[in-house]
Image (cartoon, rainbow, N blue to C red; front, side, top):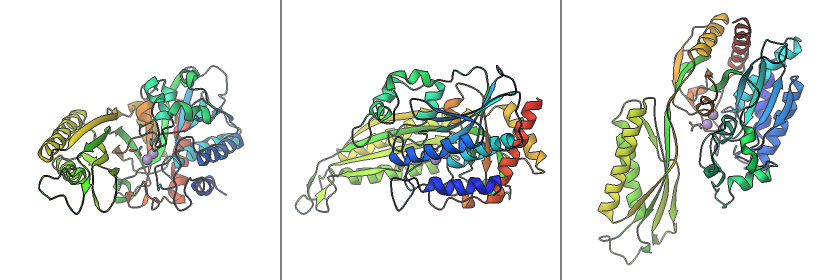
Length: 407
Ligand code: HGY
Ligand code: MN
Ligand code: MN
């Protein structure tokens, strides 16, 4: 099998590692994540790398430099997924990085720098709600508050780390301590329609949009659906519905801004009971931080107005905030030349999706290579890439490594 065919087959193997039989769902610290990490560990060894894992569960592959003491290039992506995920978001970046090192290993080739390939244990935040837990551990920016995050069953991140064999009291050891870093380069599906529209297999990422996540709790008054008159109800779900539409309206009014209510839980959740409480998520993103910040304030103000009009309390808990992050000009230049070496047009494009580079940027400069995905669809089983485009990505990454070695 070619490198690209191997990557595609391995994406299928990882897709079978799921907490749910009928869809791909692989959260932090789950049995399916353990299985995926074992597979990735095996493939890292096959590519001539030394494998290790850290407290938080990131899997590391280390490919020695030609001579010890040189700097290290980080590559990789995340191994966790959203609920009902596709099989390429995250996984493709891990497997393409392994494939690029496999090619070096098979050719008996070493470089003037080491390569660390990392499969991050949690980027999506499906289990604990926050983002980039794996890459923040590597960047040394996980906080004690993060360790106290709890999942839907009340299990804390600290407990979950213990359960996967890590020591939450030693999270600081997960910070990169392997010497000088050249940077972090992540290959990832575009999760958008631009490359497909431009008939291009790959693109070079210019920046990653900033992102706010909130948890809102609306409290009204539960009551009998048959006896409480419409006037005077304190219906938390009706208030939530008005807020969801207000979120959409505020986003539509601002070019380039996206805002989403992705989760909404109704309590008590019975046909004949007026909803007394609604918990909902809010995700707001834009490439310009001032626009994002202003819009968040405006949306939250409108939510409070709706609550006041309906006599429903609105409590807002900020979950995470990440400023927009630029990709390194140096790494992007080298990636652009590497794309040209593959006789392809170079397209620079911004990422609306968040990526581990947002967390790693505090540690070292970042670069990203996007791979075309069908219809721009992601966070869905319909996520799809072609073997040909994956072959291009591996080829471009190989060109990039060569250029970096010669730089
Ligand atoms: O939410 C995101 O943008 C990424 O998929 N974590
Ligand atoms: Mn994702
Ligand atoms: Mn991703």
